[in-house]
Structures are given as C-alpha cells and as structure tokens.
Amino acid sequence: MVAIHQHHYSIWTIQGCSTLISKQDCLEISRHVQPDIEGLHKSQENAYRGRLQYSVEYNFQSEEITVAVKQAASLKAMDSGGTSDPYVIVYLTNDTRKKHETKVHRKTLSPVFNESFTFKLPQTEVQDTEAVMQIYDFNRFSKHDVIGEVRILLRDMDLQHVIEEWKELNDPSSMEQERLGEICFSLKYIPVTSKLVVVILEAKKLKKMDNDGFSDPYVKVQLALNMKKWKRKKTGVKKNTLNPYFNEEFTFDVTLEQIQNVDLIISVWDHDKVNKNEQIGKLFLGCRASGNALRHWSDMLAHPRRPVAQWHNLQPAEIVDKILALKSHLKFPRPNR
Ligand SMILES: [Ca+2]
Ligand SMILES: [Ca+2]
Image 1: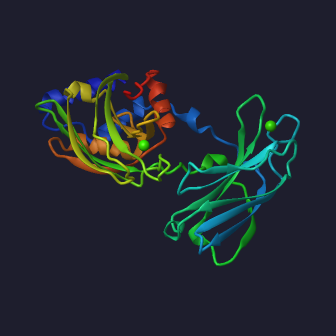
Image 2: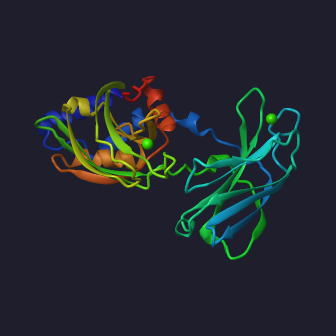
Image 3: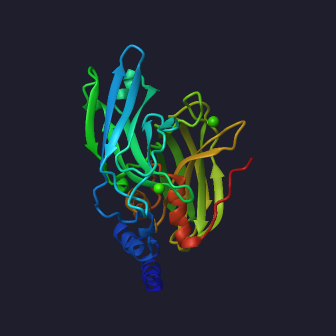
C-alpha cells in the first residue's frame, strides 16, 4: 500500500500535478486498500428453503390490496432439533414502514397461517410496487433467522382476478435492498488551490419517514481523513417532500496529499420537530469506495477543475457505517439536536 502511494506521489512531482491519478490508478489503489467486506455478505449455501402459498387480491374501487399468507411447506430447519418456529412478515415496497406479521407457529416445517393483511395501494403505485413475504424462524433468546422470502412484482400479475399460488422461497442473501432513494451531486477538485467542491443538487424517490407520507430531507456532507472524522457541513431542510431540490455548494480545503486518504460521506436525513432526526440513507466516495461511487470519485480526479455530476442510490446507514467502521472503528457523530 505504501509503495503504491509513493508511486503516485512521484508521478505528481514529475507532472507538476497537471494530471491527477487516472481512474485506472484509483481502481488500482482501491484494490489494495479496499476493506474486507466479506463478513457483510456471508455466503449462504444454496440449500432448499421451502415454499409458500399465498393469495393476492386488489380492489380497484377502494385501492386496497389484500395479501393472504396461507401456508408453507418443506421449510428449512433452523433450530438444532430439526425444526423451525416460523412466522411471516408482509409488506409492500411502496411504504416499508407498514409491516404486518403473522403469529409464530412453534416447532413445525409446514405451518398453516391463514392470515390476511390489507394495505392501501393507489393504482398509480401498483406499477412500481412489490409485495414481500419474508419467513423468519422465531428464537426466544437470540436473533430471529431469515428462512427465505418471496417477492411479487405486482405489475406482472393480472390483478383483475384473485391470484392464489405456491412459490419457492428465495435465498435471503438475494434480498433486494430496501428502496431508500437516489441523490444527485457534483464533485470538483481544484489541485492548485486545494479545493474540493461538492454541490448537492437534488434527491428523488426518498423513503417516506413521516406519517403524512413525506419526509423533511436535508443532506449532510462529511469528510473523514485517514479514517477519522474531519469536516462536515449540511444543507437546509426541505419540508414535506420526497423529491427535494437543494442546489447548495460546499467547499472544503483538501490538499493533493489528503485527497488520497479522504472519504466523502453523503447522508440524507429526515428532519423531525418532535422526534430525533433520522437517517434515510447514505453512501461514501473516495479511493476506498467501490462501484458507482468509486467511478464518480475517479472521474473527478481524472478531470480536475471540472464539475462531474452523477446520481447515486442511497444505501442503508448500518451497512455503510459497517464498511467505514471495518477500516476505522470510527463513529460518526449523532445529529445536532
Ligand atoms: Ca427457532
Ligand atoms: Ca420529518
């Protein structure tokens, strides 16, 4: 790792910082310093998890959907006695705060649930909504285990009729991330003056955090240097919206040497007058990032003095914090109250 850094410092010296490290260089660096995140995605054996019978009925007049959890069969045994204590959590992806769950059925691999749950679902949201049924194994003294899940994309169904069917449970590791929203911002780095300019442009499809079906979003921009919290700024709060437009610019002093070791952490929060402000989602960029985030950071470094804008999906705060903590064991401060 040290050797790579020295290599790049020497390139900068020779070229007088006129070109920064390329995307390839950044990828190269990142390969060496990327944290080991295997622990976060523990590989699951592809064992058979069982199957679930359910029915779905949509009422076009009342714009309500009823999901009935009928029964399960051949469930995977999660307990040492060769059984499980299954129960099912049911929700729609258009509003993940409203979750229902069935009763727990003790010591069985073929539970009969026969419970149904009704959700409000406007016709305009049917197209993008999934119904999710997750089967868990109840444990009295430890964390409940996921046995498997079924996801139904409602636009693929003929909702004019009642649908009743069996489906095999999917591996829980293939669980799609909860939709938290997307954020667009631009990054610009000016080597000569050591300025990093972040413009928070807008966000869309943010998760609903308040009971009125909206959120009051604001964005926090934090820098960590050498894995320690360093600087932070935040936007104003936009009231009652899931698609806020910010267009707020933040400038940080970051030298060429520091830019190599900086993590830029962007988090979206829901402001709340009564309760604690809650984090909707976040992501981090820097040479240690991966995927889309790394690409954006590399593009910025490869094009000094030019703003580079990009959309990013928000990730769950726990997951991002875990990746950051793996390197650093650092805790980011709670929001100011
Ligand atoms: Ca159990
Ligand atoms: Ca709020």
